[in-house]
Image (cartoon, rainbow, N blue to C red; front, side, top):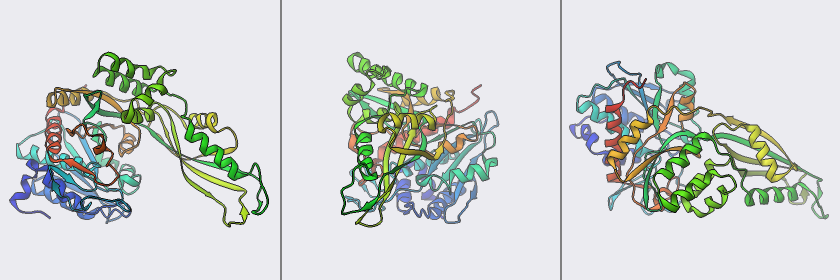
Length: 445
């Protein structure tokens, strides 16, 4: 654990703190987040912050730190994960666990997802102690394992087995929001207020089997080809949820003229898809929040080259827009693939929570002050985060991990890919915004 005086200055050197975190290889699986969590625990305890460890597996602990407040507001939670996805079979310019600082960027797996954000949260908490802040309510920091594999060893388990640790918490911040996004030359700042729901599906296709030497028509393989071709060629129907509508209107508010009109046209189901095709990279993200989505990811069938399989199973990664149900997914899929396949729901992870926007304005004001050229907007995440687990305790999670990023679409594309990196100065921006949130958090009723 860190003990020297230099370590106490990490609240002013978040890039250096991130370098330390990246150097712990927490690739999940297997995770092995214990050493990284212990390092953070040492920093916080040296600053006099109370910490608690809870673990289903001692190699995969969760850390909950608490900075005592005045009791004028409910406890407030910052939560982030330190596990990362694999770097296997990726061609990196610099070693992925070196944490090198090169040309103003910190390089390494987790720089953006999400050790960089964890570094900002830790640094903001340390700054609060250094400056003698007594926040309106207790500030909690949860440093978590296993987010990248669903949270079975982290947030999901923690919420189920130790909900008392989060008693009274109504609001939290986590990943996926606050980073600079660019559209038509304008700066936008998403603040996540909702996320899609996981709905894993299984499609089973059946047909006549037999000897591989004989011609076969109408078999499971042929049906598979038709199904995959239909899914590849067609979107599922447009579904505009209320959070998605607010997101589109928020983006449009940061634009003007034809760009504004084009974005607002997304809310007309007759025009949605044609507009998405014109919006490039940002259109891809909007596409996902304006439709249920279904991607075939695993195909299983056949066991011998000369035997025609009579049954093929396809695993489908389904994601539902806020408010939609698995029945909606089946209905949407049927409209695209027909009735050749039997469809069933394997896993449904609901996140059907109407956003509580009371803290949104505080975060939006902080971002506008930090970057007057930017426009914040409420954001619906196309993926899922640990926020969905905390939602089961009635906690509204916001994606708020601010980073001032350059207009370089390729940078964001390095998440889960080679050459993941973050500008060191972006981390300073993140710490400043996070600290201001801790300062301003207070009674909201």
